[in-house]
Amino acid sequence: MSNTEAAPRVALVTGGSGGIGRAVVRQLAAAGYPVAVHYSGNRAKAEALVAEVVGAGGRAVAVGGDVADEHAMAAAFDLVEAEFGGLDVVVHTAGVMRLAPVAELDLADFDEVQRVNVRGTFVVAQQAARRLRRGGALINFSTSVVGLQFPAYGAYAASKGAVEALTLVLARELRGRDVTVNTVAPGPTATAMFLDGKDAATIDRLAAQPPLERLGTPEDIAELAVFLAGPAGRWINGQNIRSNGGIV
Image (cartoon, rainbow, N blue to C red; front, side, top):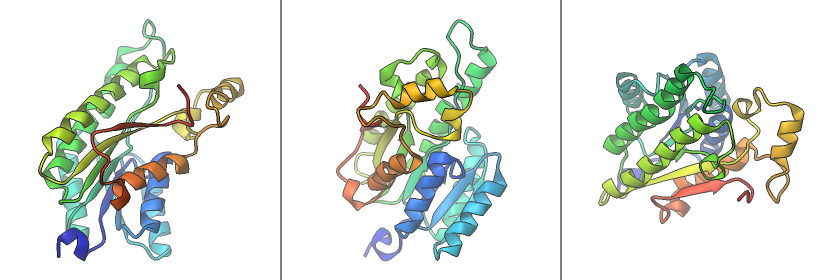
């Protein structure tokens, strides 16, 4: 019997204390996964979520660190393996968004977006590629804006285009490992990061774009990530999947 059959599948969710990440943690825990809840700046939120999972009968631990710091992430992965005996699923939701037209964006903001979203994804993917057990899954996060090209999203869309390219390359590099690598690309989703700085008219306009005529919820996006993490998603590999209610 393999490790993944003998024991529950173990998951690490980066950005696990944030909107989509929190929904992913809750759904993975409900499905029986021991879950590591990663945080960068808000330890209290991560520990509160851990307490919630444990209080419901699950297993969870909080792990901190800058996703773009390879030493911090190696230590975080070490902690997960020490706590739970191995690692099967990494859901990388951590990211930042800075919006402005290309002509106006402060290059310091551009550098921050690329550092967190591109380097951070590469660092986490590198650790996942080295450590995930057979039957494992890495789920990265992009954005539907890569295809929709909304104005003011230039830096963010550029960073997520890099995530999509990395995902496709890594899926092929892991041939023979029985590890899947996919990207979830949400459309407009009602998270604090998305809603911040937008007036009601802008939010209403974006909510009206999908044929389903609403914003996505963190739970909508988490459903797809958890599907890709589990046995039903094993034949999906090297894909960028837009979860956006039908926006084209």
